Amino acid sequence: MKTGGQLIVDALEANGTDRIYCVPGESYLAVLDALHDSPIRTIVCRQEGGAAMMADCHGRLTGKPGICFVTRGPGATNASAGIHIAMQDSVPVILFIGQVASHAKQREAFQEVDYVRFFGDIAKWVVEIDDAARIPEFVTRAFAVATSGRPGPVVISLPEDMLTSLADAPAALPHTPVETRPGEAELDALEKLLGKAKRPFVILGGTRWDATAVARMRTIAEAWSLPVGCSFRRQMLFDHLHPNYAGDVGIGINPKLATAIKQADLVLLIGGRMGEMPSSDYTLLKSPYPDQTLVHVHADAGELGRVYRPTLAINASPSAFVEAFAGRKPAATPAWADETPKLHAAYLDWSTPPESGPGAVQMGPIMNYLEKILPDDAILTNGAGNYATWVHRFHRSRRFATQAAPTSGSMGYGTPAAVAAKELFPERDVIAFAGDGCFLMNGQEFATAVQYDLPIIVVVVNNGIYGTIRMHQEREYPGRVVATDLKNPDFAALARAYGGHGETVEKTADFAPAFERARASGKPSIVEIRLDPEAITPTRTMTQIRDRS
Image (cartoon, rainbow, N blue to C red):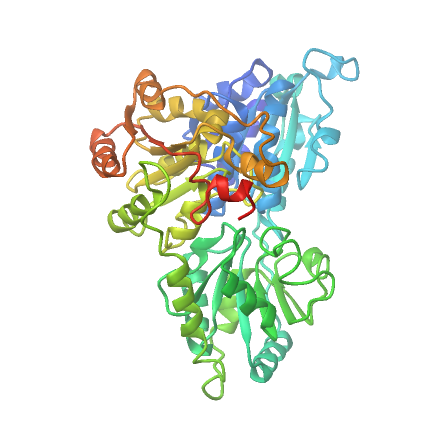
């Protein structure tokens, strides 16, 4: 006989869980007690949104479910931000929520929420366990649901009395991974379509990739001379310096790349959904009927034909698809072979940062410096905001599992993600980028980095405004500024107050020595860049946007 709390921890161990992210709560004390004697590492966070985002980063970089525990009511609702990210980004996460005791349910008890209703539209599966004996069944099922088909978040509600009651339950067994593989008929059909194509283009996206799959995709691209683009915030799926790489298919796309996709006669979309952002509001690929011949490869049959009608639908995970297709070779040198290097050259030109701009700090030289000194396995994280343009456009990703950024465009993600990334890969450099507004949404997780001696470096690009919103505001309502100005703390002093290292950059030349001091400190660090708000994008000033020039 074991308590429900012990059964939860046993089931996590059986399914290979090595760490969890949590904010403690009295509603699941029995689980915390069981964790005391478990080899599972418990990372205590400062706010549930940050904890859920750490779990998302864990799932994003490993492909295994990130596990998060929070308490009921405000704890669960805080965590919903991270669950929404995991849902839109197709990332495996399992959120456990302490719930009110069974006798108090349906009475609007203290912090009571109906989690099935609350999370129903932003999670892949939501369940409340009311029988401790079924805990092994439900937890193992949660791992299967979170990782199969299109991965996503699962939410499990745990009534308090169920966690303390004793039950005679079978020992938990690990979930069985489910793989979807392409058939020979689909591979033959794709080979024939490629044989007829004159201007094909490949777009990589989604999850369920690994380093081996990325390497196989490179082999396919080389064999077929295919130009390859990566979907929004999925840049780590192809080496940016490879001659077949054509650029990122996301916000602020290179116009030459957009033209190439629109003019393609065949688009091979592997793993991604090609949602609103990567599709440029459904203009690169028209919905529901694309102008191009579309071959869509996706692990979830429900995604095939949901937004776009494909000419050929292949129900397979990216890793299984590239494994199956890697052995296929063209009968002759493809007709488009000479065009692919031109797209790569256009990418290199597009991803070369400008040397000048308004103000005393120039982001272009800073990005050039980082590109020279960061190793290929450095992990870069960020949330959302105009500052992220500098990372996405000018950082040339080389390896898999080096990027954690929300395709859902959620602010506040970069700092907690960096904490999780450094926890997972302590030997690697982890750099979080954040705007001033973005950082202060989950900046409290810098304290978590200090607590666990995780020397992340957070580059805070401080321009004193909610930059993206101000840019749109000035474009749509020129000169009518409201609700977008920010008065910020001294971020370097804040870092020191937390017990970390802090630097302030007010001139371009200050950045390199400040960054090196942060790196050498061995502490979690904040390097604050005080950027002129005029430098709102790499190519246009705020004044130019306001004047529509």
